[in-house]
Amino acid sequence: MNKKILTFITVFCLVPFFSLAEYPSTSIGVIDLNKILSESDAAMNAAEQIEEIASNIENEIKESDQAIINEQNLLIESQTIMAPEAFETKRIDYENKVQKYNAERQAKLVKIDELIATSRNEVLLAMKPILEEIANEKGITVLLEKGSVILNADKMDITDSVLKMLNKEMPKLKVSRD
Image (cartoon, rainbow, N blue to C red; front, side):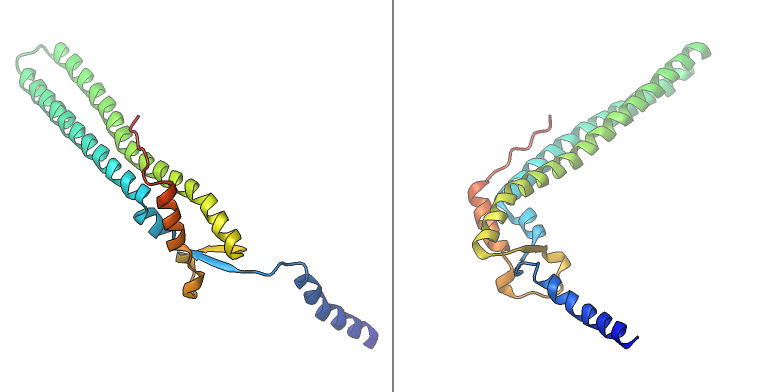
């Protein structure tokens, strides 16, 4: 019985040492993705373009809202002078038009969110080879996002290096509404 316990303890103690030999030495880096996505030249350029597109969409929606309100007012005014059957037909046409308009309006608003997501993805894709280059250069084997790190040494943070290289390689980003 004692031999079994001794064997178990020996194996239990040695297994962690054998498994440690399989892992390469680890060097950790930290990157602040929020800073990259807000301060890089490409991200700021894309934000300006998206803001302009959003403003245009907002103006289109205001104009369309006013047109729908005007049509509603005309329908209400015409109710008293129209035959009930004719008015009912006009009312149904108006309600169908409002439903179609609401769907188009929602699609325009969703388009803004899609533009933001697409531009963020393009910046992240452009950043990937830069991260690989810096990681190889500095021997980094694990890269963590700064938001998930509680404490790190300043020399572990590669955000500024990535930002400089990204700005050089991708100073602008074309954002299109189409």
